[in-house]
Image (tube, rainbow, N blue to C red; front, side, top):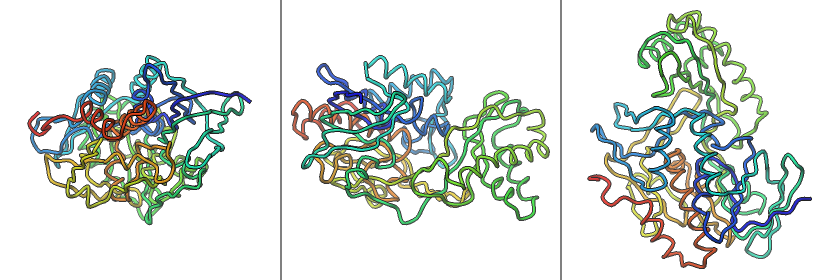
Length: 419
C-alpha cells in the first residue's frame, strides 16, 4: 500500500479540477490531483466538446465581453492561441470559443506541470475514512495498485458527487434526465459552409423512413466553429435518455457509439460534401451533460439564474442560458436578459455537513435548471479556480469574508458591460 500526504486533494482533472489545483498551489501547500483517465481535460477532452461556452456576455453586438479576469482570461487566451481559433457568436447573441482537443490537453498538462502539482492519472476513488465532520483519508486505486491519501481539504470536481456518495452525504438527483451525445471528427470534407452542411444533414435524415438510423441522423449536427479547411467535428445526439450516472458500459452508450459508422456511411453516400471524407477520431467518452451533485450550504436555483441575482459572496459569474437536451436532437434554450449575468455564491461550493469538503464545476450545488446553465466549461473554470482559492485560504486560516474578497478581486471584472 502506497501512502501520500496532501494538504489539498482534487478529484477529477477536468476544466474545474485543473483550475482548482492551480489555484490551490501556494508556497506552503501540497496539492494532489487525481484523474480516472490517462489525460487531463475531463469532458472537454474525453468527450471532445469542442467549444468553451460561458466566457462572454450574451449580446447581438459584435463585441466580445468577458466576465472573468486573470486565470480564466489567461487560460482561454492561451487556448485560443494554441488552437488557432477565435471567438464566434450565433444569431441569438451567444458567444463561444471553438478549440482543438489536443490543444486543451496540452495546455492542461503544461499548467499542471508548471505548478508542481502531483498529478495521478488513471486513478479512481474506492473508499474514504471519515472522522466526525471531516474526511481524513481517501482510498484510491491506480496503475501501481491501491494507495491511501491523507488530506486536510478535498475538492470534488468529478461531476458525479463521488466523495459525497462515499461519505453518505446528501446529493441532488434530477427528476428528469438529459440526453447525451457522441462527438466525432471527420476529414476530407468538401468546401461548404457549416450552415449548408447542417441543413443538408437534416434534409438527408428526413428522406429516411422511420428507423433507428433516422433518429440518430436527426440528432447529428456540426459542432459550431469546428470546420477548418477540410475537417470538422460532428455531434451525434443519442435519441434516448441514459442513466444519470456515467456508465462506460451502458448498453445505450455502447449501441450509440457503434451507430457512428452507420450515420457517417449514410452521409458519405448521400451528401456530396462527404464524398471523400473519412472519420479521423471518435471521442473517448460519451458526453453526458449533467450528473448527481453534492448538496451544499446553498442550492443555486432557476430563479437565481433568470433574475441574474447577485450575491455578496458571489465567486463566479454565469452567462450561459439554461440549455436542456431531451432525446438527442431536441434542445430547449431558456434565455435571461442580454448583457447580464448571475452570481454563483461560495456556499454552492461548500459541503452542507463536512468541514473540509468543497466542490466545483458540474459538481456545484444547484438545481437541475441552474446546473443546465452553470455546467459549461467557462463557468467551470471560474468555480474551479474559486474552490482552489477557498481550500488554500482555509489551509492558511483565513476568514471566508477575506477569501471571497480575494476571489472577487482576482476573477471579477468591474462593470463588464462597459469593459
